[in-house]
Image (cartoon, rainbow, N blue to C red; front, side, top):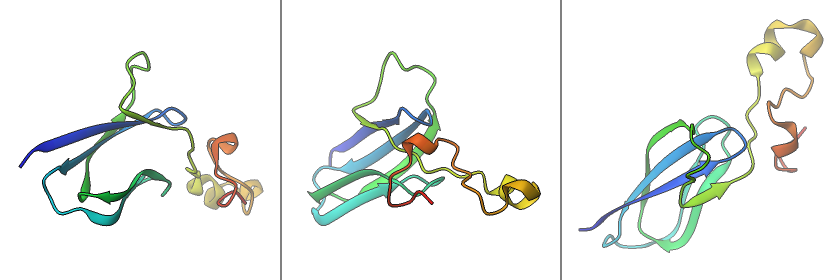
Length: 105
């Protein structure tokens, strides 16, 4: 068993995802990891061993980026939509220019 770790950095929301897998495990047809905050796919692979999101953290050093980069984020400020009347029903994406077109309202 050989434990492997990938660092995946989202340069939009400054998050780092630590993804691990056993490179000797039986490959699955498709594996993927989604962001726990906005549900975008941060890692996907075909015919790859099962992967696990073991840690996520704020990305504090952008001079030393991870193995893979993600440049989309669909995080929404749902609390403000509920608590500020003039924002009800309006787009509350924190990074609107980095939202995939299929999930943008």
